[in-house]
Image (cartoon, rainbow, N blue to C red; front, side):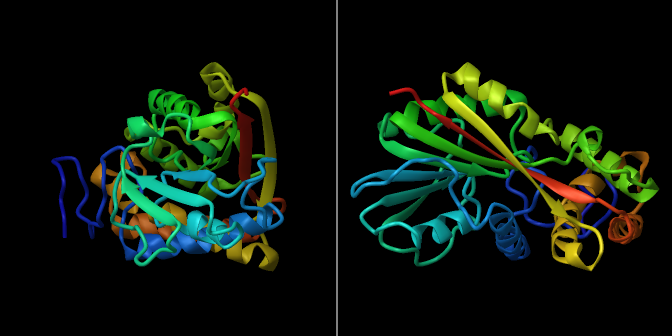
Length: 288
């Protein structure tokens, strides 16, 4: 058991790589990311990359904030092995073992990529870093993406909305309380639950053009929404250590209350007509 601070609630601690990243970095998290990947891929018609880039032999692709490398390994199956694919993450804890020969992993911050990478990538992919980047860090990351892309290269971003104010369905008390708690977890780490709604503007500020956004609603109600609903609940359950470490924000008093709230949240989503998780893909191009 772990009591991280005077204000923290005792709980079963999980491995975390940074106080600014609210998800853990352990085997269970790697499995959750794999499961989540499948749902997101299906939502966008099984397309891993929505940009119009056409990769040629010798081209380089970067997966920024790769985590467990789930997107990267799937993408590697779709392109020739003459394309080099790099994955970077602040922590190597979830890097896969024995990747394909054209895949390399590197521990590095997405806000400070290697200097030698300037103008060397045809495509940069990044997904689900809303839980790890402040507004300033997002803008620094986009500046780095712009630098490492070749002229004419593309970025392919995917983020979820976890901001209560941007939910697009009529929700009940369990959803409201859960999403209020999620908001406080994000705020405590200085990261943005609604980052998806700022990305296009920050990309433009960084110099990108041809910016385009696509949104998909992944239903979470009824039997048809069970798979996505369980993935969403698993994601919020993975935030438990961050919430309890911070003292529960006056919304939960102990680990059992957190678990009960998430159970009520899932049950309420099941019977809420029109309930859905919003997923956004934003693409943009570095001018030629």
